[in-house]
Length: 135
Image (tube, rainbow, N blue to C red):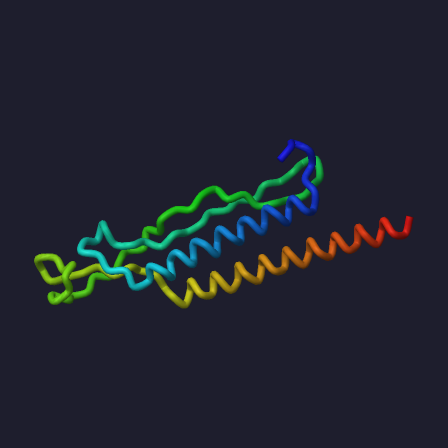
């Protein structure tokens, strides 16, 4: 994208991209919710996207920037299951610390935000078309 001032469509596009990052991270976490590992170090840790605000001084519009997607420092849950093939010498396995309910809420919220941005872009497009028809 050029260094020109941001348009409403560019702002919406960045917001939609950020919501997709949120949805993908939550979906990955849900997919690994039941993951079991033989050691604490190997246990799945949830992904967490980090965002920041980016202000375009030329237009005065504020948008979002994805700073990265990082592993959470949430500790995996130790469970005693000596019959499990991955159990360590003490008979323990490590379950991922994914909160399935929280991840579903994250997916629903990011999906709604994505839909809101699509609606905002469609409304802006319609207003632009109506303005051109009036000329």
